[in-house]
Image (tube, rainbow, N blue to C red):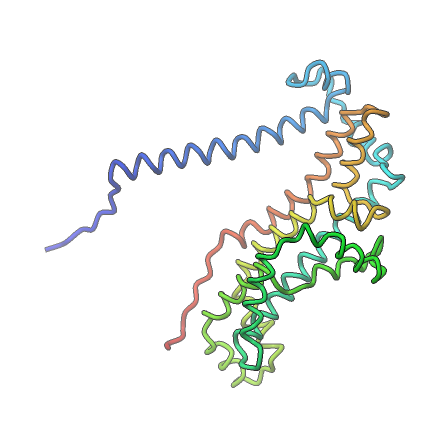
Length: 287
């Protein structure tokens, strides 16, 4: 006698899944439409953007993308300089901050020493404390440290606490120590165990957190305007250029700059897409 187990969904479940699918599809299409509209707007002249905002360009103005590198110079900073600043002030804080969170969470969850448990509660308290009322004190501290308009400003992102620490702490706390024991038996030291055995198993979460942190830093312009006014990023440049539109109106150039600045985010997402969507299977250990 053969028993077949059929995974059949009820009518209510099918309706719910269908509604969710439609909502997510509409949400994704709305983002694609915004991106498509931005590309079309960047290929039109300024007058076409004002008079016919939803029409296709009569003649594609590919020269707008060339003029971005020569005419798009807010605060007398070239496009390439702003691109370098954007890459530097987004990649370094994101990568360094996440790596420090991973290292700190690994040490405080896998090694027993006085105060190891306190880091988790400190991170929780830091997340609850308001940050807006501390803006004046933060600016004074950064000013006294000489980090205003300084490339060393990225060290302010190397805190090692907050939500990312708690994510890694939960992961390493539930990760079997048998992996480390096997590596120690083979002659590995503490650094090799962490970087070659334990950390690679968190690549899915590490890639997702890096992507979110990097995109937030790439699109941020408030902190850069406050602390790095002489080292503008692309987001700051677009903000300043849009602010100066009352003096120098070039909507076509603005849209072209937005499209060019979105290319790195697309490249990073494509590179990290497999890491974010992949699953990690752990096996071979019996507890």
